Amino acid sequence: MPVDAINEVNDRLENEIVQLRKDIIRVGVQGQPNVKFGELFDDEQVEQYYEALCGTLKSAKKRGLITYKGQMLLKGMSDDVVISIIQ
Image 1 (cartoon, rainbow, N blue to C red):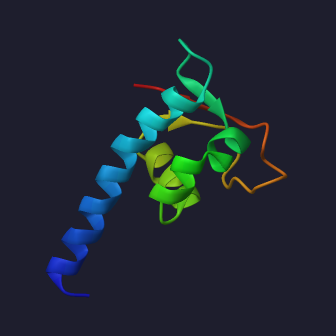
Image 2: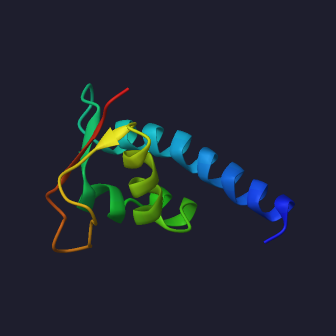
Image 3: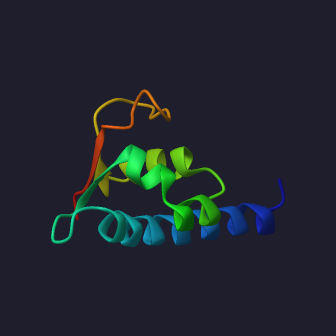
């Protein structure tokens, strides 16, 4: 993969992680920095923005920016899993 393409992917991911933090606050209960996965996944703006929401969540978790139980979140089965902002 050419360097420009790698940089473009990294930039997109960084932007998605910044937006993810905003969406967790917007979609979740007001005043609390968390949201249930099902609520986030079903939000219309979230559906339109993210190319791969689960991949963005996993990347943000690896970077220590959010936390949730488990390794992978799946629609239906993980709807009640709480995603929390750490920083």
